[in-house]
Length: 101
Image 1 (cartoon, rainbow, N blue to C red):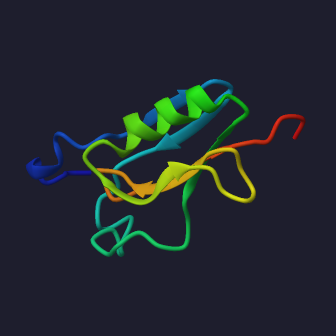
Image 2: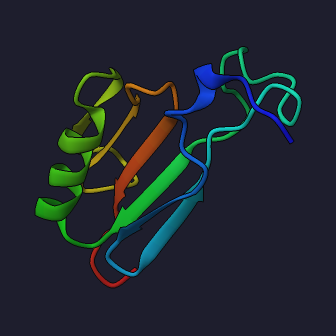
Image 3: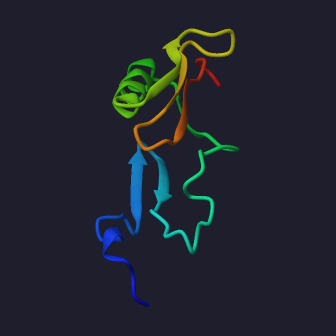
């Protein structure tokens, strides 16, 4: 199968490991993802940990260059929570689990 040279820098497969959690992703050509040019909706990637320091580090690193929708701060359900859209347009939630959860 021939591909347009403009896609030569796209990612075929990516594997992101954060602690014992992992996410697999790929750039998809329009013929395989017909709505790729539309905003992402219907999902958020979420990261959960009991370690507030680690949660803050992950939030700050992944939100850099993106758009923070809810700053990383205490909520009624979490010692610290925040959400953002990363620089690639992917929505994220970073959640600190209460101790013992």
